[in-house]
Image 1 (cartoon, each protein chain N blue to C red):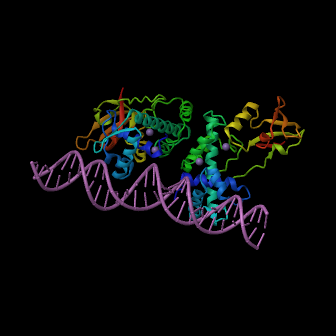
Image 2 (image 1 turned 60 degrees about the horizontal axis):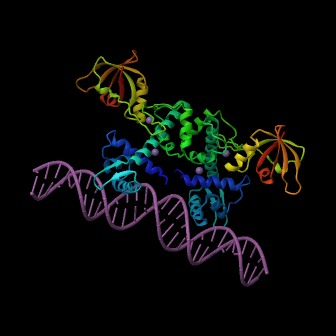
Image 3 (image 1 turned 180 degrees about the horizontal axis):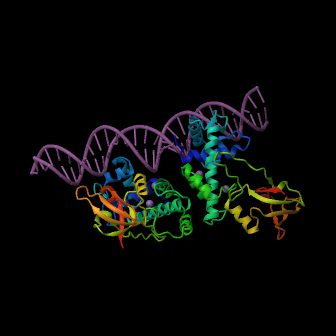
Length: 220
Length: 220
DNA sequence: TAAAAAATTTAGACTAACCTAAAAATATAT
DNA sequence: ATATATTTTTAGGTTAGTCTAAATTTTTTA
Ligand SMILES: [Mn+2]
Ligand SMILES: [Mn+2]
Ligand SMILES: [Mn+2]
Ligand SMILES: [Mn+2]
């Protein structure tokens, strides 16, 4: 029995909201993320529970079952591989690919995914720095640090973003902050936590707390 | 107003059954092609007519409007480009790509199609020899000949297939009949119209009328 | 050209995925 | 500990796309 487009989206969102610890996800959180009403979410939860894809007790929130987790990770794998394809092969910007991948991720066919993976050279990360699950369904989240946790004077590597919104990514493009860039924190403003950072040993620029909170970096 | 997956499939099928002359397509023919019941087809026809995509008068069959034709050709363009991608870039066989392209053809995004087209080097034909409409929606069907219309002694080029079924394509693979092969008709059996043909000046093999009827060739 | 056959449409239902409004359960605050 | 607020579920509807059975129209045949 195949899962629908809609079911796959729910599973992917539950996975994401559930986090690494697999915490319970609330009906309202899902309504927010799926842009539907809570009542619609309840309907879907009953269905997913019947299919054995989630653990669900009324009023208690939901978690993925092992089977649901497996499906979610497959969809995430497809999403991220397609994003790599769109950026690396077709020349899209990293700010343009999310919505298209959101559709492509639901194309069925195991073989297609594996051939695509081979064609792309088995990439480990997508254009936003997110890790790509392997063919067996292993997904290892690297533990990056948020830029707000970096002290003045430290030099770090830009490794990913938390916010995937086109407007945020375009802002980073304009600032010259790309994946792999070296960021040195020069100064942090006490008042608003805005920071002054140097990119790749060149240009120095100011970034707001809002931006810092969405940048994933790695100490070297 | 976007067209659904299902509407796009109907338009594509009407286009194909309607032929170059734009002849009326019957409800039953559509039921057959869509694997649905005639009653369901009638419902959909009313909807497509309301959207101005087909000309429809009860009991009279349907034709595409200019607007419907445009949509159909866009879907066909996407289908055939994706098939080229699957065969040329991912290494699928021509017998394996139809069903996957049947899904990919419904991914929206004009930009995606144009970038894909560029990435593939603006191919003119798909892996089955079918012409790919250009970005403006021009589709020019080359006028190939069916192998049954070729006389003994003639040498022709294999240019396409009428039947796209995997089993037929695999049969051609096993026979060494690929796109671009030179076929010389050596003999035609009066009794069952089976033929003896030489492929690329090498191996000679027998092909049934059933096969001949589905091979598109070109005199040189 | 009237009867029979075939094709098509209409009527009435079903499922998936959504909705609003109301009821029930849980959480929070006095 | 009770009242109030919040969250979640239930009840009852809608739309797209499908179905079967019955009615209607068109086509074919005698
Ligand atoms: Mn999606
Ligand atoms: Mn991504
Ligand atoms: Mn299709
Ligand atoms: Mn094709």
